[in-house]
Length: 355
Image: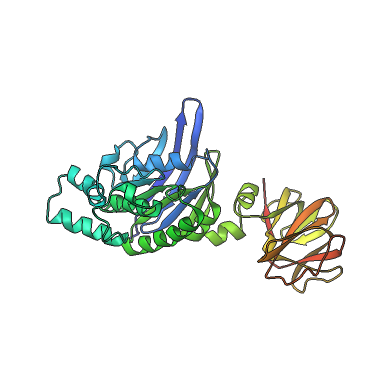
């Protein structure tokens, strides 16, 4: 059986701007037809990585291949990719149709092929009936669809998206997330999506690469990244979590500073200083002394309560640590500040992370 070729392969890629290392020795393989997200804070190197795939920046070191062909030093027009930016860069004096067909005309694609491809692209992004409007006659979401159609009409093998939803308001951004997912399934090509929004990456992608300070820290499915973070940074950056300082006692047990022991699996050496990551929604409050049937528990005292309508968030003091507990759909307030409580969680809910 023939082994499939990755859509994008990055081997030992480093990018320096004078003395600044923007991307530091990154290795990454993105599958054909995958929706892949590069996630991280501003300045982490995710956009520079995307620009190197696009050919807008060239790597200082390393190899970059698209479907097996080395393209690291090739110009953008010699790569089977297209890019959609946060600033859609539509031509204001052109209609929707003219914006979409612009790239094809530059490549001297003629009718009837040009007309057919433009019509298909317009249909994909649901802009039928708006072909003769100019960008200033469109909403933000419609302008985004024009930018997508303009990229897709060139039939790229890889579509690169650099924070394409960042300029939209929350409700429209959430709607466009679903549309982008559906569009990617329809066209079946590889999408590489750059974002700093954790929820956006979790909701849209099949796999996520988390970056910080130019390094690729972890690659995995949204569930793997969220439930089994590889480091303290990943645990803290992806959603909310409690990080409790501990040391490794055995491959199945860690000990907190106050002597309490927590059952948690780890491959780190005995004595290693680590943190235990506990997601607020994975832990629950019960009256003091209620032991977990299958898991671990810690005793503490409620110090604060935040009512959010759909959830109640408790801050519980456990020794010298404050632990956040999120209770969804809770009716009333069964606990009050000053109550002595036990925090319980199921086996496997605690993840041990290193610095």
